[in-house]
Length: 389
Length: 128
Image (cartoon, rainbow over all chains, first blue to last red):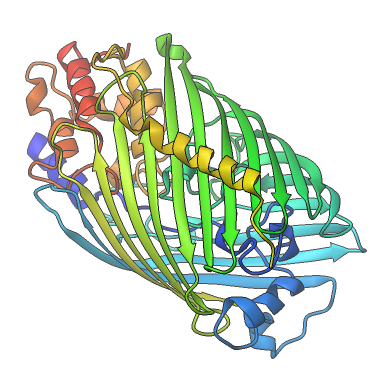
């Protein structure tokens, strides 16, 4: 019986969860000549649908050529309406030292639609909906809740916003991530995964702040979706309620320092975390340095135990020519600072190529070492084709 | 273009050094409780209950590890743990990738975590 169960579990092994969220590309801050994320995104802290300014940047700065406008500029939308889409196909090779390693997969990673309706100059309604990615097909004979594409519909973001302009005060209410961290697209990065920003971990959030050329401040209160909400509105990860604060100060249009804090209170555990972020753009060398470090106190109240954690990221992105980014990165997660062998190190190399407006090719290699007791390393190689409307 | 301000460069460097400096941290004694009330929120929920795996909305292979109650019901109720022979428990084989795809497949657990779970099983695999 146990062997049967084992086979069932193995055959239905979980997907890798490589679908992407509506995160931003922090690599474009400063390097594209733009100081702040909200210059190109409707969202005050970046991510998601890009504005008309951002679409111009796509054609003029980000990609090797083409028209970044909606539908490649073939369709002109009214000023009160903006729309977009993200489609990603990926193939992966993972190896972890297990008996069935390596594993190969190819799968639709993301299929999201976005719409934004503006009501006057300041108010807007933002809606996003899509299908969760599946790295492997579900075997109906094994089980699991979902099998069809329709069952995997989810709306990660939907909110009302008051934002008179790209600079200045704003207020936002609805479902989205409370601004915190570097907000990479890659959700597998430790600084997303272990700080409360795992894929589809979006909360219902009330957020307000101020964005200027020199600095920005975001203050948020959040809570997970109520358990009675339908699956399409549910989130995953720790069901914590709390608050987050993010303050970034920019210097000379080429560097920034940020401080951040987050408190998340859950039923069985709570997390109190704070950290710092550094960004430095060296124009002559075409190098962008990004770093983040967070210290986390996790109180597992159910077990009367408190542990201290640390998570960090350090990377540099080189822009050799327009439309190409090369990014070697280092990541560290220490699950418990008092217990040896609970750390993880990851070394990543990512190549992003934007050959034409609306198209992106992503190549990612990841080498991860877990613990310190001679465990085999885990490797990931991924190639991805991304089209955005 | 602009010249880099010295102070900001140093500050950034400090952040980077602080990030790297903690790499070697970690004591030698594992004082974490070998109890499900710790293992679930601290290890299995963040590592296994991801969106396309064993979260409440996916429950891949019928396995739901999204909270203490659901996780315990799955592991104990479906025979993934065997307190009489803890090292032969199916969940231990899976976490070590012995005879199966290694779990979690995207990011293997540290051996220290596997040993903690093994000790919980050896202690009776209670919902404690």
